Length: 586
Image (cartoon, helix red, strand yellow):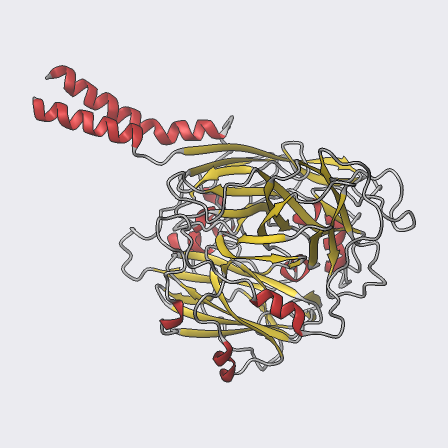
């Protein structure tokens, strides 16, 4: 009897206090009308807001997000940079999830295991990110893990991106018709247009972003480029940007007067309000790798306002990098971002203690992007000569139900020599392999590339053609680990990645136009032991489509994410009641 009571109290204590906490959110995506550039247009709001609300959780939390689709088309939400450990079912891209139909809701559930940092969520289908639907996703340290800097006095999120006044459906129709999107109409900062720093370039009456700060305080400013295709240089007039973190990894702390932020990238800066506040200060996000004289009006401008400011911001905007004749500037800046090997990340050990430079590479893939070409009468973009076609039945769902012919595991490790083609070709990744990926940009525009489910070490970057001799230039000691990297036109970037996360993971161009036109593939990574311990099973609420569409049941009403959490915790309550009954009996 005493032993049973001891077991009961031990289990009860463990269930109540040892389990990782839950964080639940409800996100409703719908259309609203706003005028960020002075022209009324339809955008995608999240819970009535544009941009959407911040999802703020702590390391190891179980995250439950109930997404309600109030749009008139299919929807999926993906989590840029958040590593879905063993749950590619929750990744939110077409290769891993059937879409959420209009007027339906679907609940994502995943754990942010051993993660920290600045990320964002966005809709992954049908060019929808060009209309909004995005918002910040922050994973904070547990209290027992110290920050590698003094605790900031505040946390500020800034979402920047190029913007078109055309509806996202019109933009994708233009691409379907073989047209180029052309120059954007502007750059938004937190969903707002530019401050009227120039009466000729900026019309009157536009609502702009103002960030209120206190003199002498230091803020952590998280900046995300959620735009369509334009690299943006971010800077704050008269203030230094002390870089501290990027996409879940702490960096060596160094000051920048400005930093190029490519599409899909996220950064954390520590900014001290050390100016005399004689006036407000400009915050600027201006386009890079374009003709500056033609793109003058495509500049985002906001205001940094001290509480004791004595007047409005004035004068010319702070200068962008002057590197028209210095092609090495952008690459040197990118490679100056190094991992902070002495800082703890999500766990109490230095995040830089992983000696990636001494691991033998098991496979090398050279992925070459080319300018869009016409394939079978349609404008398409390619990797290695293959323009990806999303499978009708998502990859892991096809595996689970043994659907034949859903995809092929024959993606070439080198560019094809024959004519380009459309295909459902995937990379057959080796579980626990350590692979090298060379991203070659033979396109005419700067591009960024993203890998779901993983971070990779950015070990090399240069103009020109990559060769085997290029490996001699790699940083094999303190390269930054991140999930989105850039490749300059006519250049290459090399990354190293350890394939320890089973599932099917999207590798794509982050430029929306190239992604929409087929510049993507997937890494399918399976544990050959098949012991069901390295990947979670398909969730009970999995959606069915394609060859399995007949299995889909009618939509079940779920009022909120808290309902799902209640269902998830029901078994805990039942166990507690069971042991309570035993204790009463004895």
